[in-house]
Amino acid sequence: MAELYRDDSRADAILARAARRLIPVMAAIYVASFLDRVNISFAALTMNHDLGFSEEVFGIGAGIFFLGYFFFEIPSNLMLEKFGARMWMCRIMVSWGLISMATAFVQGPTSFYVLRFLLGLAEAGLYPGMILYMTYWFSQATRARFIALFLAAVPAASVIGAPISGWLLGLEGGLHGWQWMLLLEGIPSLLLGAAILWLLPDRPADAAWLSNEEKAILAARLAADQLNDAKLGAITGFWEMLADRRIWILIIPDFSIVIGLYGMGLWMPQMIKVLGFSNLETGFLVALPYIASMIAMVVLGLSSDRAGERVWHVAGAAFAGALGLLGAVLLHNPVLIIASFCLAASGIYGALAVFWTLPTAILRGMAAAGGLALLNSFANLGGFFGPYLMGWLKQTTGDYIVGMSLLAAMLTFAGIATLVIGRVFFKSMRI
Image (cartoon, rainbow, N blue to C red; front, top):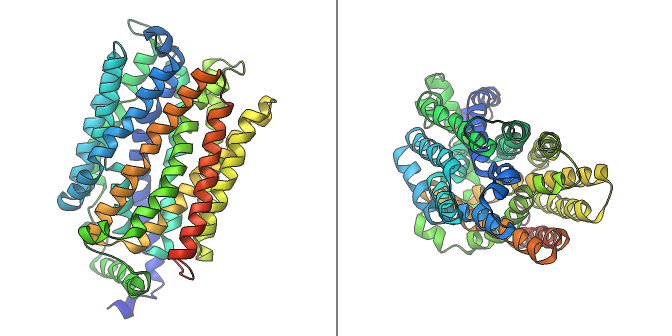
């Protein structure tokens, strides 16, 4: 059966149809997730004053989310593999939606820290779970483009959420604008959590909209990946994964990219507002770098799949992101600063999208469930250190230059590390 269907031209059409059904739903889920994770950066424009938060207090609260994420990431992904994507994703979304809405009623640093930690605990497993879910449907040769399309939801969340968040900050009526923003932006998570039960089949075999023959074609296309498993040294067992040094080394570039992503993303609204823009204008301007990054991610994903090359796509994008971060603080013209943020966001998100083709090339089964979660849990500690260091350095130095230079150095390191890892572990492999 595998030989019969492996080169069947129908497989591409079936994959395209599956992508049209699944990826918009997955993207909507991640839009809601990312919005609830980073809308605190907009809340800070007025919340910090209302609650008397310093830059350091906000930086700790913004980043402590990722500590909760770290502790529950692997157990959550293993439970997704055991119980199925639909039920577990529903649980994740409903719990994080409620906690995100509760953040509207924080009273001081302690309650702020606790709710942000619980938000990370609730959402843990979502991102690696989605990457794992894609391995159930899409073969390695096409994965970069589909991961890029899915991850375009991250900047899309900011494109959609930045202007809306800026507008919601102006609401009045019994609550502060930032409170209305947190309450209203949590509702989509609750609605999507319920909708998942009908919209996401656990695997191709469970999809009512595929015929038995189409299911067999997809199964054969995925089975073809196994022909390369011996060459790639693919691993299937959880404990085998923990003993494989490749997984631990891949944490290095992932961690370094994520530091840049959140260090920039959670402070960019404040950095743009100080240029003299209103909250609403800031919302629209913050959306521009994310529009640029959506385009860059899709282009890089397609380019990587067509060339069968991953390492230089990741490294080159990371280097471009570093240049953008430096330009955002070393240039003085507002137009050039926004353009630099566009370059930085494009490089960071483009590098992250293609990066995930590396671990998914060598992980299977429970190794994939645990390994992707392990990578993401450690990497997302960068989501704690990035915002925290930016806040501490801003409070210490009085400007953003040192903080952004540090983020640029981390992205440069990510690019160099990826080139070294590619040469040692993935040399001459078309993945």
